[in-house]
Image (cartoon, rainbow, N blue to C red; front, side):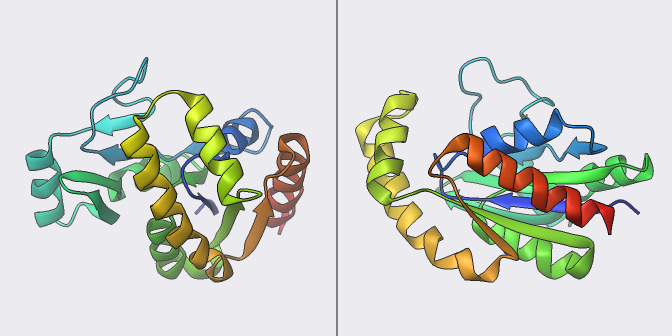
Length: 187
């Protein structure tokens, strides 16, 4: 079975950018596409960035025990990792890379133990995170306020991860992630 790389961070910390960078390196990584009950943003497509499900479809899959992990992040706003997604990647001999919230990251790490490396991407500060979210321009001020409150809570999970990468300078954070991941995959 391939190895598993878990990336978690508060929204806006840069984890997706780092994950996308790692996917472009020659590491035999396949992205674990999460499922969500939120609607697509911008140019997002079903089966590419996420598997988009209705809240009812999501609850049905929960009932059928089809998720490795899931969380209702906000009311009727679910995110989760389908067991079938991990199977699809590992059956083909690939290593799995996850881009998940902190609770999901902790749950996946508990499930897979030493086969997984959990990495927490930390923003330089809450102020910097707020600035990034505002510049992204995808969320209303109310949503940003909720994301910041959630980020403060999520930051408390950092010590539960194997590695913490502070994303103050994106190029430095990408290089650090590449080094840590290459070492883990080489074991």
